[in-house]
Length: 457
Ligand code: PLI
Image (tube, rainbow, N blue to C red; front, side):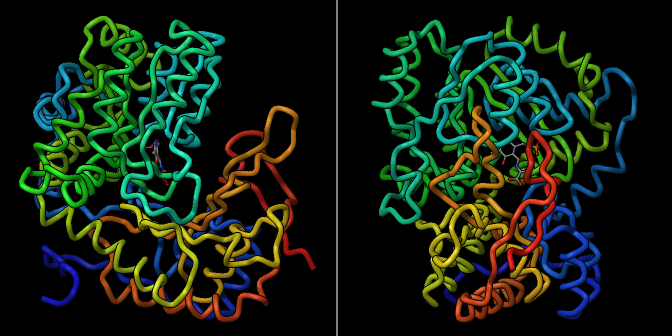
């Protein structure tokens, strides 16, 4: 074995990719308004837009699709999914949803009242949007290191306990229905939270009668980092670590499209029966019966299978270490990236990469477009465009202005990672040629999905 864990699987089916020329890609990105979200996937060579819903399912998951029980009510696939969540995550009650934001919608509607505050370890776009739509205000309580592009901290996703306690003192615990703890923190660079921090967040919350709800989207990756880097966990299995993490929460929202290894699906899980009853009343309005929640029976079966596969050590080791491999290659070539490298993606520090552009010239958006033209690799802006506008209408300027190279699970090989690294390193060597962008169309919410841009000449 080389200096990285090679694939713990073999390939049974392949999807051919159409190769394009640089000229084709220049035309395609112009037509897409310099927004990688608006590219046709047929025009993309290596798609690192997201790790959401882009995983390769195993043969067992594909087999699961064949035993879908497409009953409107009481599908046996639902009972398997419920059992998998209870067994692997340890919560008593489960409500299926079509994806993560479906669960966020239910949770926010049930728990948030006008004027409430919801602390969290950095915002996530859809999570914050649902909190605000329900009259809540998100308050960032991540440790300062979470906002620094480079920090020597193995758990940059940790909650700053002092910031959390200060918020409780300032607004009163009765104005905080729950704290939302993301494991790992996507917008900080896929950074994990330590078990010690989760335990302490639970203690403070319990003392103040505040519930702890996780955004469990990438919780298995978080468990891997705990095993690797937190003292006392080296001999524990991923399943044991995950169970302990979840024992410090009252519930969670889950985007199954990430760590449950499926292309669609999610759930809301919790320990409290009253909360569950409320969620079942709402799920029928937004998603469907509490035994399918917007999912086909076959999708629930595939998610149940994926949940068990996801806690396999060889799988998660390969998944996270492949991300580390790409990050280390870029780092060794001097490309500025978020460090430590996170669990699902390598985040390029676009401010450092393009110091000749101000944040108003949208450096991360411009760099994502340039990477696409150079090599057909599609990445995603995670900077000022994703952060949206403040109440006064001005851009919200996040400290981190990044381009995310997000690795789908079990889809690409190490050779693909080499192609990505070569392209980014090539652009870094020629970075002065990359021009800024300006908005030509901007929608009012979640603007990064559909905004259009043109180069600043
Ligand atoms: O895309 P959904 O609705 O299944 O999940 C929403 C969601 C919630 N929390 C976190 C941390 C996410 O990363 C997330 C979705 N992330 C996407 C789509 C991404 O590309 O990162």
